[in-house]
Image (cartoon, rainbow, N blue to C red; front, top):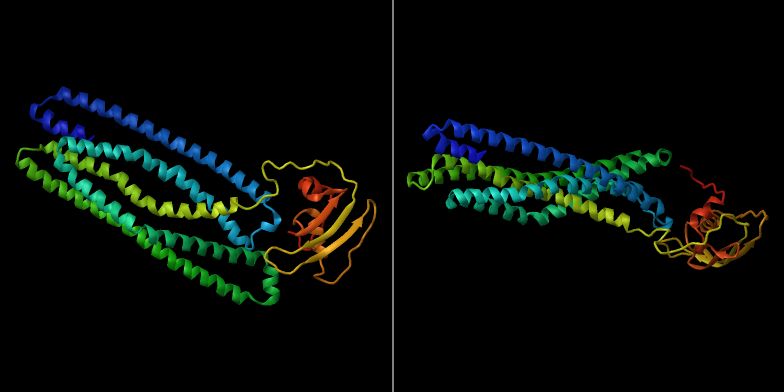
Length: 384
């Protein structure tokens, strides 16, 4: 369109070349239709890729969650749930803004080259302005990164407070700690609001600064163009074309500047998501379990000692017993004596610190945990 305008002002109007005007008009119309088709195809493929990534990644995350070893379960359910939702930020960053910016960036460079072709001096304001935007954007990246991480953790903590209050509502009410939970929620919400305001202020400084600089560049181009026209080095059509091309050429730079905020959010989300995906699983690749469709029911503990993760005290200390198939055995003891711990060890939810657990004479660690648990009836203390 800018080149069309330049040719109309410089060639069609002075020479009254109506036939050339129609040829140029038809050519521009075809280019506009082609651009519309390409933009529609780009939007379609981005949506298609986003849907594919969403389905595949969410399935992998759920598979990872269900396959995580019980001893590696998170202490905070709310914070863990917030981490699981972080893949949405990563997906949106990959499938939308990044791809569009990468596609538009070569065209922005082409527009600047065309400006230099019209007149080399006319591209200088755009180059100087673009350099200023990038330098400022890069200078605030460390601060934006720190604020993004702080905001993400604060948001996860606030969500943890809400979810855990709902899950443990009976405990909260029975202990009369509603005021404490309310205060904790308000404190986290206030902190999150303060951090979010700082991040938005920093991000808006990039966006608003880029917009203001674009206006200054446009004015500088007009002023420079007037001097070049006075010297006979530029035509009126060339000035109009350069003005239009400059805004198109600087558009990708503006997108890159705005992309930094999304990048830090996605990077922080990816880091937390990587922590989720890095948790140990029950079924490691390359590990083959023994398949036992049916069990006789013999259970034997051989000098089993166990302590819970993060604890220095032994919950079980060199426990040994044997239950033969068909026997009925009841475990009796005071609270905290290890009855529930024994059940969890039999189910394979935890692995003994020392000793071995045998099921039908086979080490329980060699048996497929899913097959073992399907053969055991278990009712836990707190059902959900």
